[in-house]
Image 1 (tube, rainbow, N blue to C red):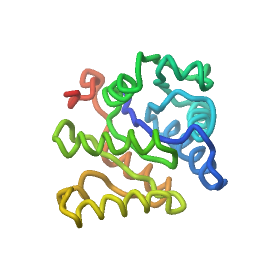
Image 2 (cartoon, helix red, strand yellow):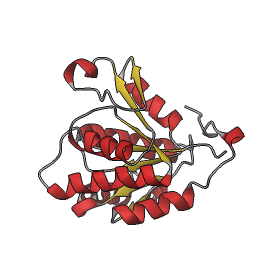
Image 3 (tube, helix red, strand yellow):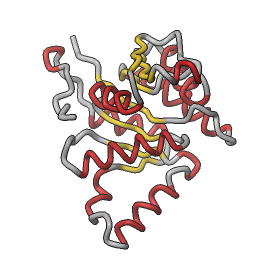
Length: 198
């Protein structure tokens, strides 16, 4: 029996102004479910988070939501996920999501999404992990972030090799192909996400 491979997706608790974002989130959730890739996400029931989780569940996928306790009072936690993990803080949430994930995906979202993405890229730079990181550039959403990273490199604040810490993909189908390629099925005895040094 193969172990689950887990993908942490960072995305918005809002839908955003473009319908493309919601459609892409639903496409990603359904694709993860069909591929047998377990979704790890922020635990919300609204916005792209909710669309992503609902689509993964509808496709028969396993979904783990990770949400800090105080956010359960500010946002609606998803009551229908396979497992809902409630943490004491935002930092504990990010650590838990890191420990559960074999790969990371940035999808459109707000400041929280940006924070989560930059942190796992920074941890990669610090050699705390070697897990794949994908920036999914739906409707050009990732371009300002990429421009900021290029500016840091140009001004000498980030190494040139920073470009190799993540991969940019332009569509959900390509993202799913890449996830399948970098996350080979592991024997059940190997479950446990080897590079959990945080």
